[in-house]
Length: 291
Image (cartoon, rainbow, N blue to C red; front, side, top):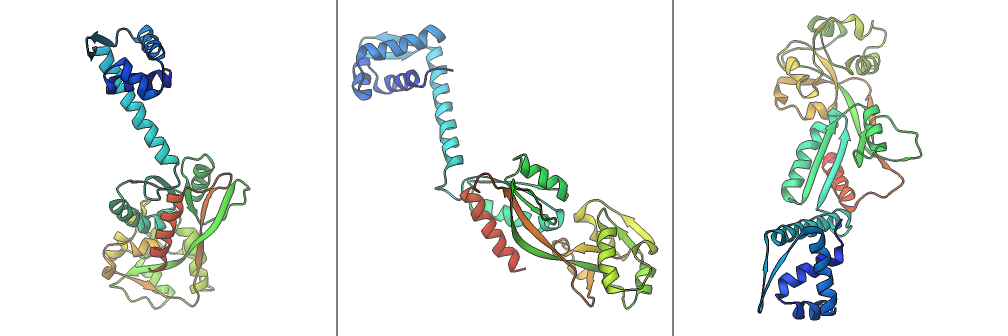
């Protein structure tokens, strides 16, 4: 790696146009300026053509000038990334379940549009992958339905999310027999969610496995499409239903009790959150609480 002091001298020499003015500008001797240039030229070849009252850069000199500019820009990016002074500059990495992710994604994009210095990086994942990604520092922030018990993880409550029984708007659902008649739209978490919710809504019935499956998808944004087309019902977290673009084609069937999960915000406890991460979480929390 090239000596940073030699690079500063080279930049000053190019800007000042003479060894004398460069030495005065840097509070160095002319001999020191010449030595710095000579050290660079020993590694890179001739950098300057010395003419009376004029210095001209060689092709190697121009290449070194471009390198100096790149180093300077990288230095500024690093300082901005580590700075606590600007909440609206830098990258935010969030990994979360798909349901809350569907709601947060447009909110995060809106924040980025309003603050072009932000870079939003979001991934949907199951709870075990979320925890591992935060532990490995691949994402600064995570949201998970399972509260971690790990001293390396800082945990705080973000919001609560009820489970919902969602059926086609065209169907009248008054009993367990109605659910069995229209069938079930399955997804990777549907049976676990269905067992929890339906045992509260319809105690004493046979359970979710006794209802015929009329479809399956592993894409959370597509689960409600067959429901909207009248092909069956499903069980989903509320935020997935709120993100669906055709709410008039579906209905939520209320039950005697509310079955809900807490979503936990997690990050590494060994170092503090960046100021921009704190600010983004505060903005998202306010918007989610208004839903």
